[in-house]
Amino acid sequence: MTLPDASPPSTTIDRGIYVMPQFVTFEVSDMDAARRWYVNGLGFVELAVMPGPSGDPVLVHLRRFRYQDILLVPGRDSEDKASGVRVSFAAGDDDLDARAAIASGEPGGVVEGPTRTPWNTRDLHFRDADGHLVVFTQPAMDADMDSEFARRVRDSVTRAEE
Image (cartoon, rainbow, N blue to C red):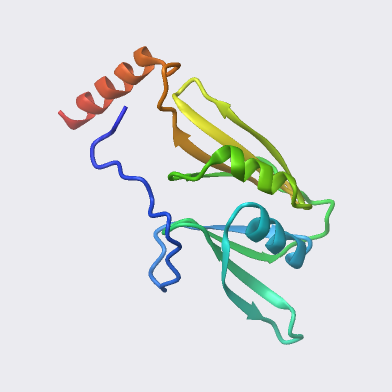
């Protein structure tokens, strides 16, 4: 199923400075451990680090693809974990099985999947040590795709355009 004007994100990490139309900010209990998890395990790059008066980082700006930005900031104590926070990013042509293997080998979080969804995607779930859930998602493009679901989505897009 292809939606109008749907294009995958560029797989080249854009290190340019631009106005971000959306980003998430995660409060983390261990800035260095969280940075390692996202960079080494999930494939983000460290775009910028802003040190505070003591020299310790007060903000770490991470980026994966264009418009896929996470800001890490020092959080409250470890007893106050994230609850219900979930952000999904288009995975582009990333090999989700390979990404799962890489992230599973990196301490600092839990990896689940990739798994098929009823809405015709493959999703790979990552939960960091502070409880934040990040999902890499990509369209399912195989014989098991639910063609009836795809038809309903196409129909709903058509109705919305009328």
